Length: 444
Ligand SMILES: NC(=O)C1=CN([C@@H]2O[C@H](COP(=O)(O)OP(=O)(O)OC[C@H]3O[C@@H](n4cnc5c(N)ncnc54)[C@H](O)[C@@H]3O)[C@@H](O)[C@H]2O)C=CC1
Ligand SMILES: O=C(O)[C@H]1O[C@H](OP(=O)(O)OP(=O)(O)OC[C@H]2O[C@@H](n3ccc(=O)[nH]c3=O)[C@H](O)[C@@H]2O)[C@H](O)[C@@H](O)[C@@H]1O
Image (tube, rainbow, N blue to C red; front, side, top):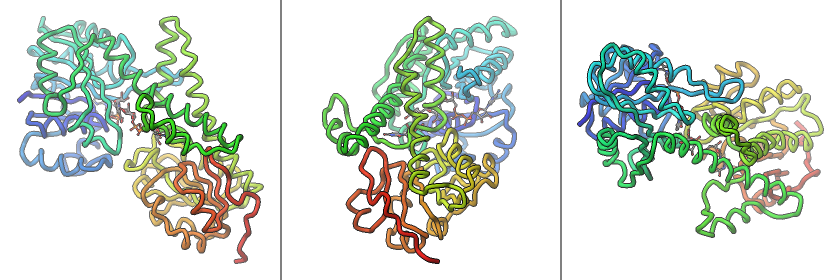
């Protein structure tokens, strides 16, 4: 049992802290956002993540998990301190380290015994050393401490499952004692623990995200070729994915990657490489392809409708992917304002991300939690997130509700034969259009 303080109670901090409590440690999750902490103290959970609420309730009840905005006190009580604050993209594309630096200073000022200080936030190479020097600068007395990089690989929507059963833990540190402590913390979650240097651990995180982003842009480029040559990208994914050297994951073509990490981390990696004098052309191309996918889907829609002006468009999905209410860098945030500015009325559906989207887009669209209500009298349906509710749509009902049966699908949810059978005009990614140019408007 270790006393752990997690600084930053967001997606990563809250999930990690809760899972460390579940595996038998005494955990304090702290944050400088008092509203967030008050909400947690009152039993609320600021994010939607399957299984999280139950695990928080269980561990709070057991007394192994608590929340506070008194960060100084939480630092003093800890043996292990996890830094899990945000590292957002700055306007230049670089990772903004101001939250990390601020936390390092507060840690330095409050260290009162030996502590292991672990970075879980995704940070550019060299940040571990920077944290070490900031802490040293602010120490009140000459207390010993060790620095560790322990990057996070969880996926939103599967965060609890993937933390309790992680595929691997990467621990970057020079200290044998710190390695011992952090590897013991991970033993309940995985037997695959890789010990590396601080710098190697930091770059492993960026390399992992950049590689996954590359797979997505690669298949999207192949999808764009498929459209031109009459092939089907879903079959191409299957065909190449059967090769165990390639694997079938992250080969789903569509509107490209969103979320709080791939866009930010690919941009940060470009800066990391520039800083060390390397021109990482591949990752720049990955980003360019990704941006192009959002434009392409809107072009397909415009092309099918003739004009956006005066049209009613039902957008299905606001979150950047299913099972999360996270809308950071979600395609919907770019696409809805574009449709609206160009004269369309947008009716948007999402099962859980409506409140978050309202905060950003306000009344640029009408919001619905009922998927069928969203589709009433629509000239087109635009699928942006592969929610289960979208996959399970009753297509007969959809056809009845819409003004004309036009679906533009950014996630390749339906098979072409089904859409042909139901008589939709169906435009997807990397596959042949169905009934293009034959939309028949219903008289209403
Ligand atoms: N969201 C994800 O799925 C993953 C995120 N990461 C990385 O983990 C880090 C955190 O990401 P998220 O949890 O998504 O961010 P988040 O924005 O959800 O949470 C960060 C939290 O840190 C708090 N904070 C900021 N400054 C603080 C300070 N000085 N003192 C105390 N608290 C402070 C904020 O109030 C916020 O609650 C980022 O570096 C991200 O790249 C890594 C893997 C997965
Ligand atoms: O560093 C992070 O924050 C995390 O980033 C991603 O996790 P996440 O952003 O939660 O979501 P993913 O499931 O990876 O999806 C990212 C985006 O790629 C898109 N995607 C994913 C897979 C695919 O085949 N095609 C595709 O377009 C998704 O729709 C989504 O917009 C990584 O998968 C995690 O390992 C990592 O820890």
